[in-house]
Amino acid sequence: MRNLEGKTAVVTGGASGIGLGMARAFAGRGANLVLADLNEELMADAATDLESAGVQVLTMRCDMSDLEQVEELASLAKEQFGAVHIVCSNAGVGIPTSARNIKLSDWEWIINVDLWGPIYTVKTFLPLLEQEDWGHINATSSMAGLISSQMMGAYNVAKHGVVALMAATERELRAKKTNVFASVLCPGPINTNISQHSVDYRPGGGKPKSDSEKAGKVASNIQAMLEEGMPPDEVGELVAGAIEQDKFWILTHPRWSRAVQKQLDALNEDQSLTRA
Image (cartoon, rainbow, N blue to C red; front, side, top):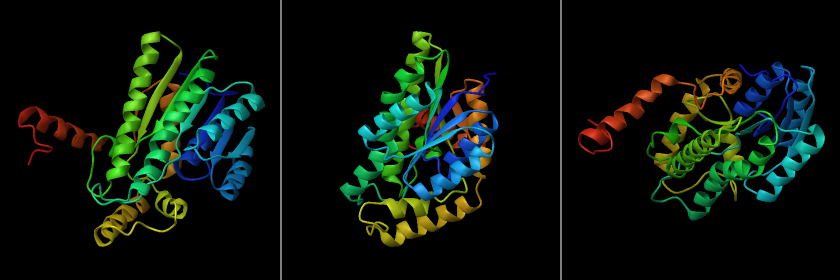
């Protein structure tokens, strides 16, 4: 079991939702924090809350789809704390969108945040982690990174990419026999404001207009699931516990892995996407 006390943890998308849940879990274990987010007001509130646990908290407004800003975040963390031990690439967006009719601008926005953000994080922070006696890099994917549902085309693509990125990273780290580990979080429904935040930050603002009626129904169903979902603080505890034990897969709803098995069974048996 790893001791996180006195370590430095960087959490992106750390001002609310799953990211804040992670930050609280790390603070509860005595780790100092670097929070990155686009919402400076929420980030300031989070910092005040977390500092009450007796840890140091550094914040930076950071667009994780911008490599220069990610590099600045890494430099700031290193300068402030002298080392980085844990990195959680958690910032993400998600809006119901058809794979056929989604605008290219929305494809680019979702892929840039949800996939290029973790790619930039691995590229920038992994060398810092490898300077220490131990380190761990985590990225937030989704069950959508394991099973693709309709009307979430761009999100599915990005989240599958995150799983592939972290799996490749972990295999390479183990091949090198380093003391740095990688993991991927694949959450099911979590009670967060990702839907509203995504609408707020979507370039041009508002919800996509293509497939509006069907997308609207999907969005309503997703929002209802989120509101009944797992509290973010519970997710944070799962992530911190997995990092303490050097685990790779982190599932909030393990029973949902049956859908993955069902897809594998169909692949092997009749090469359909999913068995009837």
